[in-house]
Image 1 (cartoon, rainbow, N blue to C red):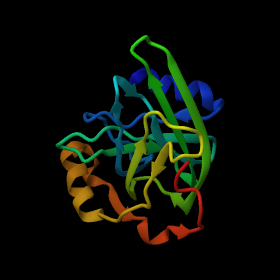
Image 2: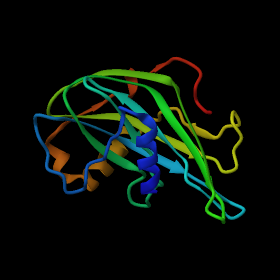
Image 3: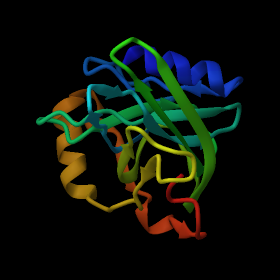
Image 4: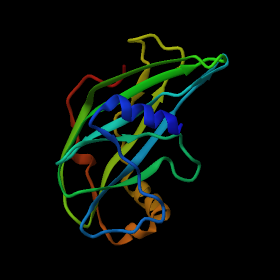
Length: 194
């Protein structure tokens, strides 16, 4: 899966794949933090291993970062946290990639950035922990263009459960002020799959 993230970074140009915090991360009260659940469902079909994925685009004060989805782990529900610099942020696009690798090692890939049907704008303040929601993504095998190759769900609000799980995974974040941003999402329509 690591080669997939490198492949995404090459395709995105100036944008970067933002790395989630390690579990033993030290907290800086001068930074802001975002968290959510980002689960990826991928498939295997007829000897092909799919290596696609989805990522949310988070546009910040200095650049656009992509928050990659991972295959869920039984203990985390895909819960991740990211350190961000304080400032204005927008979440209104996502990136989908799909790939298939044959038994002979041949690879076929495709990717597309599209508008996300929900939009979120917020100001990240230092010492604050922002919940942006729970998301499910899917990447399909043997996919033809325009045939639902990748998908991302509407955001779901599980703030209390995810905050509890987050603090078990990242105990150093316990002193930050948690804020649920889910009520600020605005439905804009279109763009849920590609």
